[in-house]
Amino acid sequence: MKRFHCVCGQEVMFEDAECSECGRLLGFSPETREMLTLLPENAGHWWVNRKRMKMRSCALRDHPVGCNWLVSKNDKHEQCCACRLTRTIPQQNIPINVRRWTVLERAKKRLMYSLLALGLPIVSREDDPEYGLTFDFLEDQRSNPLIKREFVYTGHNNGVITVNVVEADDSYRVTTRERMNERYRTVLGHFRHESGHYYCRHK
Image (tube, rainbow, N blue to C red; front, side):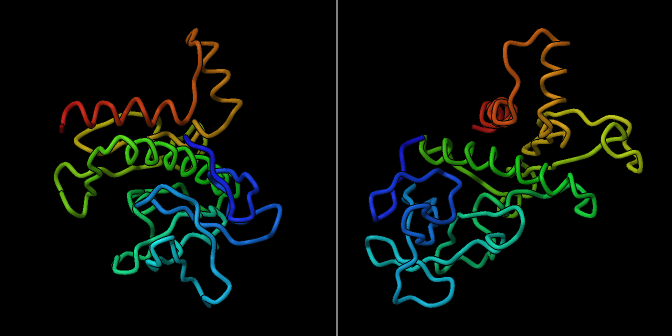
């Protein structure tokens, strides 16, 4: 992950939606992997990069999950190339699941950044219904007693990367890491591991 800066010179984080120094709105361009600012002369949700190419905000920018990625002007999707890959999210009527989804999406975007930087093909389920990449964030009865599934395994199967939403809870990961005598256990680590299976099998 490279370092990002606002046009004012302030260093900004990968997930930032605005500059803490000057207050300018920020957006990440997956095409150029650079942080852009909303130019004052542009109204609404339009962004312009250094080549004066227009982009627009992901539909989830103002959602509690808070996506700061941008979408190309001619892209038919309302969501960015990362958000649209998520097929299943946890029930949002449970407040803790909003936070869990946010944690999972942030980690997934860091994975996506790496895939883009490596030049790996990102083929969606829409483009390849049989083997396209998609993500299911599932619950089981350990985190939601009302769910029918007794246990959800994190894993990969023919392009579908499944992550148990409880992995977004720090306390669960620490407890599981100690019980399994693991050196580390992170959400991003799960995404990297399962995407490795995907690219190894479908390269």
